Image (cartoon, rainbow, N blue to C red; front, top):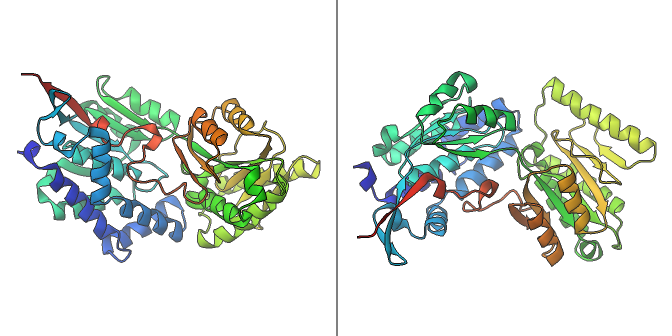
Length: 403
């Protein structure tokens, strides 16, 4: 029976399939890379990097560690275990539907992997590049028994929304309006696991401006910002820089813009449609007008592959356009918290240059899920709670046997 399949065999099948996909020359991956580039417009180096990060993170050890961290033991998925004097077991929640993200490459595959390890029946609403469908074919080669229990089909949005009524749990990635539409068509008793839009910020302390090589911090910030063309929830859009250091915030802005141009060589800009390109160009023009009138500064290149602005106040919200990054000079963490609250930002990440207590406390108070050094923000471990939610716990239901 499916429920009697040892969880370790499922973990091994998922990690072995991911290991094959970790090879950049693996033919299905090569085909998927081209399809993802075509669908998203991201440059090939960005997609290569995303796939490397995705499949290197899905290892046997990482899966086991995440499950043990949340459920206490792998054995809870295979049978009753004693905990605090009570025999408990984690049973699958049932049928799970995962609706893929439009922008974040492969994020739905991670949710699907944990749902499979929880012994759920899983259907992924795939994107047009069919990344998950292709990965599932490799997974079935590792464990044919998965068969109909791990499936993927192309998502057609509202045309298929009525199908969601038959699932016990629905995982949705997308904008708030998209998530609300999906929620409205989901069974009211089903678990609804939503990952809405989030953003990330960075914080440069005055001590860093006096000490560490600023080029190192700036290049780390540039990589955090440019990866996935600033569309990911862990992409830096706003960087706070404390006043009072030996290097002024506007001088750091100049260092950052040079770092952005260098990072742009490693991660070239995405292919924008004419409307989005016009929006970015307009953002640059407006910032240039403000700068010419003595308010802040702006930097870009001839093609507007990025737009970096220096904002002297806290009044302007992030642009939420590709490769648009704003630097705000501040006096301390309270200013950063005020900015986040004033603009209603849902934070995923907070990049730091040090673990100064008041900065970390501000990050936590502002709602950041991940706090990491500059340059590492986009490298979360598999067990890291995406959106503040657990990885596998929402795909199980607990039962107890008190006999």
